[in-house]
Structure formats: structure tokens, C-alpha cells
Image (cartoon, rainbow, N blue to C red; front, top):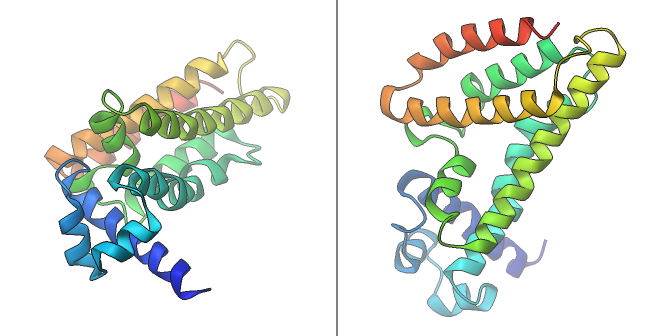
Amino acid sequence: MSKAVKTRTMILTKSFDLIYKQGYQATSIDNILATTRVTKGAFFYHFKNKDEMGLAMINDIICPGMYTSLVQPLKDSKDPVNDIYEMMRIVLLKVPFLRAKYGCPIVNLIEEMSAVNDEFKAALVKFITQWQDVIKESINRGKVLNEVRNDVNADHVACFVVASYSGIRNMGKAMGSSCYSIFLQEFKNYLKQLA
């Protein structure tokens, strides 16, 4: 890996940490420079402006990390009721970089930036669509394998799962991770009725 690639990756990684904790709009280029200890010239060598860096952070750091937790576990799901539950349990309780008090980086950016930046919105919707698609595929595969009732609407389930995740992450920011266990109990009950 070249020095330039290492520097770019470091800027994106440290910017992600700042933005995850304090929000995109509250994080200035000066905050990023102070944290990364790169010069303004080095920052602008890699990115035209903060928004270009933010898009790169979404596409190169956030989405690949969230893909591993939210999409990958369902790619070859043969037991969607259990696999969707386990995906949710693990992402809420076991993924070390996702802390309750800061919520979910994708959900945070959707709330903060979708109404004000169409490029951010498109990048975030692309990931959400990918996540919903794998949930739908999992449900439809479950129907073929007689693990899911034939009358279950895969589109509705995918929307509900993603909306539930978004909501509980936001609740966790205010109430802490203790609300996750109650949510997971009810989420499991919801999924069982799909079988």
C-alpha cells in the first residue's frame, strides 16, 4: 500500500470516528485535520472538499463495514427466521464499533444528510436497498425451503426489519443498550410468525 493510499485511508477512518461521535455537520475540516494530523494541503490532495471526503467515507468505510454485519450473514440464508434474528442480535450486541450511545452511522447520516445532500442520500439509499434486497432473497428462499409461509410478503418484511433496526438504534442513543434485549425478544416473536 502506497503512502498516499495509507494517508487517504487514515483520513477516512479517523473522520468516520469523529463523525460517528459528533455528527457530520458538527465535524469541521479543522477537526479532521487536528485529529489526523495531516496538513490542509494533504487533505485537499485527496479530497476536493468535505462532502467528497464524506462520500468516500460512506462508500469506502461505512458501507463495507455495515455490509459485513447486515448483508453478508443473509447471503446464503437457508433459515431466514433464525438468520435474520441472529444478524440483528449480533449487530446490536456484538459488533464492537457500533456503540449504543452513538447509534448507527448509516441511520445517523440518513437522518442528518438525506434532506440536504442528494449525493449522500443516493449513497445511503443504495446500501439500504442492498440490505433490503438480501432480506427479501432470504425470505423468498425460505418460502422455497418451506421455512417461511407462502403468504409472507418479502418486501414488507424487508421494510419492517430495516425500519425496526433504525428505530431501536435511535432509541439506544437515548436509553442505552438495555432496550435492545426487550426489542430482540419482540423481534424474535415477529419473525417466528413468518414460519
